Length: 358
Image (cartoon, rainbow, N blue to C red; front, side, top):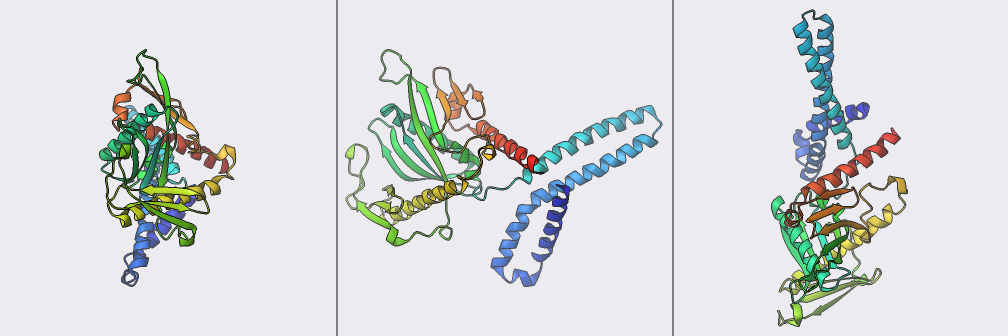
């Protein structure tokens, strides 16, 4: 691993020289590419230099311990050796994490699709709760929320909602949210106090650049229709809503949030590209052996990942066996504890796999 880090540090130094070269800076596109590559290596290189510094200090401290005769000084040096050893071990683990293969989608914006599942109106109300949870989380992160399409019920539920969260690292934080979310609670309409179980499915898709996925116009059918609110209430007097059907895959995307037909078409195309990209990624990873799959699950939307239990105020993350008893704050968007635990579990599994290959 250290030989690999030496190679990366040399590459970083070469890039530092290149991005300061006026002849390279003259080609702005190439210069920006090199600056991006340089920035991506900076954290790893700085951490490696921190490791080498601690390694050198530890070596010097051990030499001083051998030469020192004073008892008090020896005790101080031994304490320093203990601290430096701990620093060296933790920095080594940090380096292993930084060397893990990066998900190229991590820095992208995300589309989140939430659909009420089993449970009828109660499932739609739960879908609305999840929508609020993710948008409140986005507010905490300073991200922007943009609704693509929404199908509401008369009493405030959501049969389906598709929205975009724009912010640095949005996909890296939310990519583990895909799956079936289950709620256990007593509905307002339940007079006997019986607990009902309902579900909603969540899909998290990275935003796709136009150059990455080009859709053949002959492969799509575009229909326009009049937008309407819940209960059939007309909210637009023109055919501004857009439905795009991708004929080869059968995927259908609708968007009616904007008053402009053109804007609705642009939004629908973005969602369609992300769904197609998601299918392509799933097909590429289908051949991965079972023992190499992530600890936190495959991201399959048929997989039950979490339970929200209202009577007990409990959130249970089934993939990593984590239970929190603060349901109210969790549904208000305070979900970092679970997200960080999922990221840590995924990193541990990848480090285990990397260790078996070393």
